[in-house]
Length: 471
Figure 1: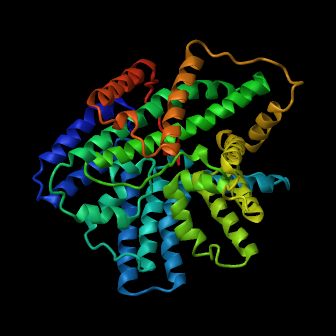
Figure 2: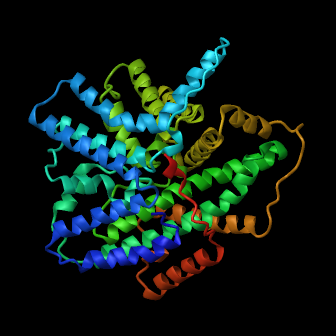
Figure 3: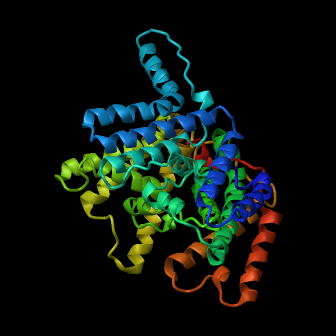
C-alpha cells in the first residue's frame, strides 16, 4: 500500500479500528488479522507475487528449524542460502547477467539474445528476502532461537508497513513484540506515530515529488540543458531521494507505532554527515546494519590486517550496489562509496576533530561527494552519468537554462527550507522540543494544521511509487 495514496488514507483508519476492536487478550487473533491484511495489501500489486513471498517465508522458516535441530556445516548452509536467494537472482539479476554475457560475446562477433524475468520483479523482494536471510543467519550464529509458530514468522516477514521499502527489521526486535500481549491502546505511542506519518507525508509529497518535477525534466533530457541546470537537478535529486525514502521509512515506523510496534530507525539526518563513513551510519541504517552484521563482520571486519580490512569494506559496498539494482550504475555507485570510505580510513578522516569550522567544511565536502555519486544512481547508464558530470564542467556546451513553470521553484525552496530547519533542530538542538512536540497545546495544533494545509495545497498527489520500492 502506497502511503501517499488516497487508498491508504481511506483504508488505514479501518485497519486501525478493526485491529483494536479485537479483544486485547486475543494476541494471536490480532496477529492473524495483521497477517491477512499484509497479504491482501501485497496482493493488490499482482496476486501471483504473493506466492514468491510465501515461498521465501516457507523456505526460511524450515531452514531455521533445520539449523536449530542439527547445526549444518558451512557448505550446507551455503546451499540453503543459495536456494533462498534463487528467486531474487532469477527475477532481478538474470537479465543483467544475460545481457552482460551477450555484450561480451558481441565483442567477438557472436550475437545472442536471452530473455529473463526482470519485467516481473515482485515488489519489495530485496527487502523481505534480506530480512528473512538475516533471521536464518541469526539462528545459525545462535543469536536467536528458531521461531516454531509459522503464523508469527510469516507476519514478521510480510508486515505491511515495511514490505514495500523496509526498514529491514531484525527478528529479535519484531517477533518478541508479536508474541507479547499488547494489553491496551498506547495513546502516547499512537500520537507519536501519527506525527511521524504527518512529517513523512510532508517529506514525500511536498519536497520529494515537487523536486522530482525539476529533476525528471532536466536529467531525462540533459543534452538540452546547461551544466548549471544539470548541477541544480543533481542537488534536487539528492534532496528528492532522501525525502522520498526517509519519508517512507518515517511513515512505515509511524504506522507501526499506531499499532503498538517499535520498528528499526532507518535515517538520522544523513546530509549532516562529516564523512562518507558517517553518512552510512545515518543513511538506510537497517541495510548498513544488515551488511555490517552478515557481510562485513563475518569476513573479518576491522579485526584483521589493514589491507584485508580495506578489502572487506570494498566487498561490502560492492554488495550494497548490487543489492540496489541490476545495472552497472548501481555497482559503480556502491564501489565509489566503498572507495571513499577506504580513503577516509587510510587518512584517518572518518570523524571530525577540527571544531565547528572544520565540521562545517567536512559536512559540505561530504554532501558534495555524495551528491556527485548519486548521479550514477539516478542515470540509466554509466555513459549518461559521465555525460551529465562532464556537462557540468564544460561551459562551451549549448546554453539553455531550464526555468520550470511557476510556482515550482518557490515551492521547492519553501519545502526544502522547512526540511532544513527541522533537521538542523534535530541535529543540533535535540533536547529542545520541536514545534510538534511543544508543551503548549495551541502551538502543537497550530503546527499540525499548518502542515496539513501545506500538504494539501502544495503537495503533488500523483500516488507515485517510492523510489526504493523498485529495489
